[in-house]
Length: 304
Image (cartoon, rainbow, N blue to C red; front, side, top):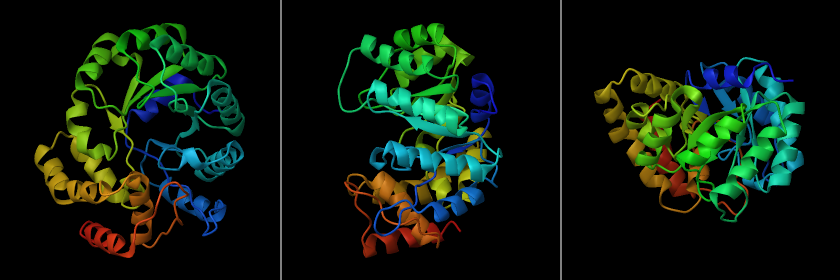
């Protein structure tokens, strides 16, 4: 059973940095639960406001529903209430409902509703999908506005009226005008989360639009750096933020952008670089080669 109401969960998430832990695999690509638990116990000791189990960085798209449940339960058990645990739900509506119900049974504190599988749809169809998942659980729902699941401000406002447990909006689009319309219309009705790849890049301008938090993949392997950067953002210390963007984040992004799917692969490579290997990524993703890993290790070494 969740320890928080949807409103309490949303308020907690909006108060600090968030992270999406990687999912550890053995060399044969099976789930390495012991390594995953060890890592979660370590991460939960930091001052982080929420952990998203089996999310995008956790390779949700490559996990079976049974594996997602196993990963989620391990996360709930290892964090021991030290920080909210957010579970994933996605794919088609029926499967997303099943995942949401399983997450509630596993003791998650909330749900990140990822885009439905593959298909494009109209606003009415997206709204029906989201509403169905909201009504299937008592947990707070964060909708991930990304890819084929992009809501406009009118649709989102209607969902907020009909679904009290829709409490979060994670932006993975980067449409400044849309974010302005959403926040102008809904204000503090929702908690707003930055969800663009390498969210540190957008953190400072998004803060001015009411986006008080973001999900940091870098937190997996440089937690102290990630927390320090977040503090600089919240202080609106432009000099500190842009120094780190110039010297670390933008070179990191340049490595990430070399191949498709590297937004996840680079995080696991980062774990290897700091001596906390999390195993390979699952296909269709590909791992870093030795040269890329050495380059990333040198870059990370400048911030340790």
